Structure formats: structure tokens, C-alpha cells
Image 1 (cartoon, rainbow, N blue to C red):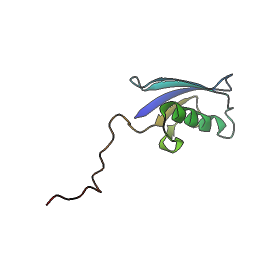
Image 2: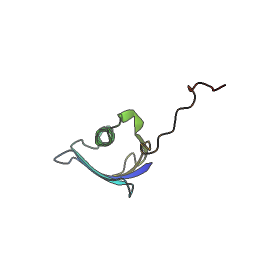
Image 3: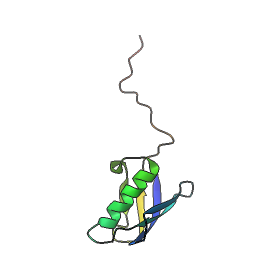
Image 4: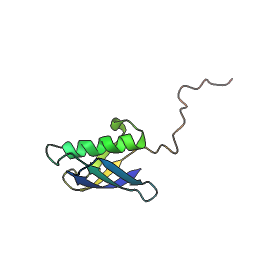
Length: 89
């Protein structure tokens, strides 16, 4: 799922407001937008808020913008694992 994120770097607190149905989030982070610190903080905050590992969330666009697009896995409809199922005879 693609999620549009509005980032507020250098905020007084770390906070996430998420509207999954609308595909939008606002993230406030204490991190400054220097040396990729704010981007990394945003990914960590979103991961914690969604209960996912940071490695599952990818920044798709907006590397240097306050408006970003991130890609997160669709956890509501996981793909079934079929590769290791025994074959019936």
C-alpha cells in the first residue's frame, strides 16, 4: 500500500497520525532534516506505529521534501504460503 506522508521535522515531539483508509499520514519528528536523519526517523516512527519492522517500509519519493510517499506491505490480506505444502496423492 502506498501512503502519502506529510512530515514535520524538528518538532517538539515524535508523533504519528495515520488514516489508512485515506492513505495519508502526518508524522512529527524531533529529528532535523539533515544527513537523512528525518527520513530515517519517519520510517522508524511509522514502523513502530504499524507494528512492522523498519525493513518492511520503503521511501518511494520525497527524499528531500516534506511530502513523501512510502510503501508499506498490505498486512490485511497476506499472501498464503504454498511453496512448502505437501502434495496430496
